[in-house]
Amino acid sequence: MADSEVQICNIALRRVQGESITDLETDDSKSAALCRTFFEPTRDALLEDHPWSFALKRQLLAASTDTNLTSYLYPYVLPADPYCLRPLVLLDPYNLNYEQKTFPFQVEGRILYTDMINAGLKYIARVTDVVQYSPSFTDALAWRLAAELLKPIDGSSTVDLWMMYSQALVFAKGNNDLGAQEPGMAEASWIETRF
Figure 1 (cartoon, one colour):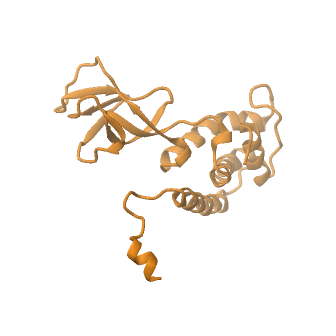
Figure 2 (cartoon, one colour):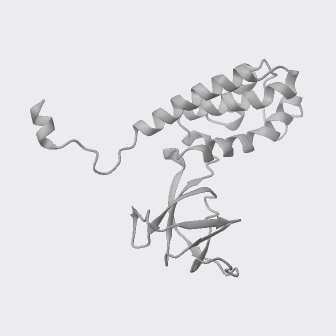
Figure 3 (spheres, one colour):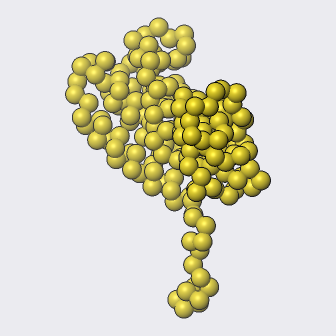
């Protein structure tokens, strides 16, 4: 598990035989400049790609004062703290553990429209604290960052790196999903006693 953005960048740079960096803000090397350019967009794209357990948040939504020109009754502002990268499902405002899958919604810009009054939201948040990342997420992020960095560093083909990223991503998603169980998935007691 990485303890800093610099460490993740250095893992990616090692994979493409790039020059290591010491600091993202003050290092004036080409490698640091490329990491400053690619790290945040690459991280956010990977976070947005899957409901990673460490990035899931639940929050009541604040009403929006924007003019509503949709057919939905209620406009809400998407959460900013932590920043909502991707809304997943509306939640019952009186029990944020109850998902309201029957209520559709539409997002335009940073406004979510729905017919649910006092809506809550389960969403994927932007997580900037790398200590919260799982080891397999960190590995996938480093491979994707390496794939983004290789061409600007030496002009080489990135096909192999994208394949490594794809494999790391499948592994990370599998590890993440092992830690979750859908309600009602526990085996019945008669099955346990039978075996």
